[in-house]
Amino acid sequence: MIQSNAFNYINVLDKAADASWKREGIISNNIANVDTPGYKRKDLDFENVLKEELDHFQYVPLDERIDRVDLSRLNPYVHTDYSQFSYRLDDNNVDIDTESVELASEQLKYMGLTTSINSEFSRMRDVIK
View 1: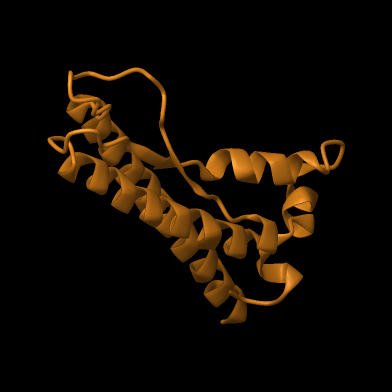
View 2: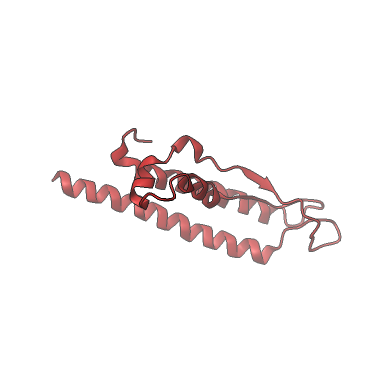
């Protein structure tokens, strides 16, 4: 993580990419446990953590909000879905189709985030030249 306000946007993208990578692993774990009796699916929600942090400055333009984000507060947590809803009699609540779509979506999100980070560094490199 780079310690400068000039890099806050990249730092937020970095946190988002880390969360996306972590969520891919969690979803893969859900898929691996699709046949485990009693297993409850897990998930990670970075978007709401970021939204809550940005909402602290709701009357400020977005680019200024990014500069004011406290990166130490952008730590999403893994939560377990203990809802009573289950697809099977053994109380496993993992739906393989839903998890597969979520995994593909998360992989696309991660690729987009890493592309954005690379683009920002490319722009900085161009400015330095």
